[in-house]
Length: 486
Image (cartoon, rainbow, N blue to C red; front, side, top):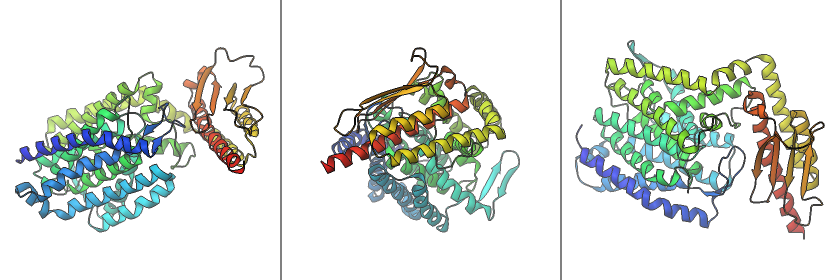
């Protein structure tokens, strides 16, 4: 449990490097226009530079590289377990490159999954994996042949879980900081030098990046960062726990990464009961619901940070096998989880959408939206787009919409307002606005106030948002085609 001086130096170096490198990466992303534009399920209203994960990766691994070349006890212990170090390094690098390609070119969820699968399988073949499940009071249970299956689900699941929670300013980075700090503390307690070094450096890098990423964010992690953080944490939680007394128990990593796991499981359950693809997105994540309750970005992030801190404390007392601390910790977790999910409407929502009639209604919504997206993709001119949206609003029983775009020589109409029969004006209606910088499209959907209360109507709003993005993509293609032909 020594080597504290080395750990503190690593924390300071990685944090300082992140503070210095992040502005440079931000300038690089802005120069090459690697930006995240406002759009569907995105809460920011202006383009934000991506590639923040590049700054975190460099800030994390440069101090470790310097330590590797240094001649002291900690460096010698790193060399003794170099296979662990390189597994964490190379798997994280693979995800960083995948995320970089996604930020530059764009990849759908299925393609990202297919790219992650071989990385996870190689790690399992190299010996990375869960060996046992520790249940409080009952002790440790050997997982046997189910270990590799759980390991595969863990590696891909956590990698994407961090990506899923990267929805508001500072959230994914903050969650990753608490996870890395917890693993570092557990590694120090278990005298696991490799885990302590790698996770201390990652915690420092996240801490140094956070001032630029916390609300209002000046740079985003991008998939470059979220996939890198997810895989690095997933592999580290496994490999660095194998030297401890719990022998790669499933319980400790689950506690360490409790929030992203819970949010991802809720998303999977939500999509399954609605008959929706697991690869599709929605606006039902915990951070979305906190914002819908009137909290701002900072308040929502801080509440989630508090939950991550609680999960980390419970993980630490579990490793220390402190019976009293475990009893209070798990009781607190249960109370916070039950009351929190109830306050955010999850219990009510799941009870509602689990009924067969509700499931059919959701499936009908998805098919309607998908058909409209196909029609938008086939639209021959910009003036036919409003009619497609009008048909959807009628089927969704929405009051109306207004769309406008700059005059560019290919459109007869630059503004279109439609209100449903029986709706005399927009007075008293909620307005949900979608603006797109690349085409200049502005699309306002007029919605009844009950949309904030009902799960079915919330899903309609989410689907209308995806249709707004589909309409913008078609407009952009039409504008590009027109300019090339002129």
